[in-house]
Amino acid sequence: MKRFSPVLGAVTIVAAIVGYVVWQRPAAPVPPPPAPKEVVVQYADGSKLWSTAEEGMVRPELVKLVSAELHAANLPLDELKVVGGVVRTTIDARIETVSATVVGRLVAPNQRLSATVTAIDPASGGVLAYVPGPNRDRTNLADEQQETVPELAEPFARADAPNLVQARMRPLDVTAAYATFAAGGVQRRAHFVASVTGADGSSLYQASDAEKSVFGNDVADRVTLALKENPACNGVACVPDAFPWAVGYTPQLAVTVLVDETGGDVDAGLSAAIWQELVAELTD
Image (cartoon, rainbow, N blue to C red):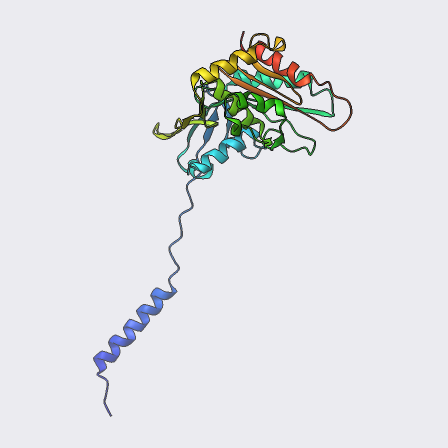
């Protein structure tokens, strides 16, 4: 029988004791995550729209759409809170306010009605105004596909681009389609985020100008002149007789109004009246 050396046995015992002590030692405490930093969401002019300091409040529909767009660009709002920063949107504070005010005055008093307004800058695709309005199911009217009418598709048939209007579309997508005429036949992606800047001033995101020419400038001009001939348009290219829709554009903005009602008689000229008042105020 082999015998263990006393020295080897002592070393083995010491190693076992050290291992036991190390095993029993509590793990080093995990440092708490850094406190989130404020992210400010701004209108296009730099004024404040919302910030993560107001996280406990209900997020406006606009902020939900901005957050979704950031997520699609691999810059989720939760990750952005680690470094802090500023999200500059394309929303024009004046156009947004005017749109909400006109809708509130002409539609809100009638509990059966709701209306949405969307406006886009044809030169960039940036969304200038987004007034969602609840639909008959009390969800977001502007972000749901709605049934279109033949009058909306007619100008695109003249431009040999009928695929730009579908049987069901979101109001924002209708606005983007008509912005193509205002942009001389160039189609641009509608977007809400113009740029994102870190708290240290670094550029984290810049909207790219994704564009596609779908018909020539001469075609766009021809359709625009035809749309301006409607007496109800007051010299602005528009389709006022597409109830419950009304849509049109100037070189600076394309605007769509959609009225939703839950029953009963509705003035078929209401959407056109809202559109006309909006454009009159915004083009002064």
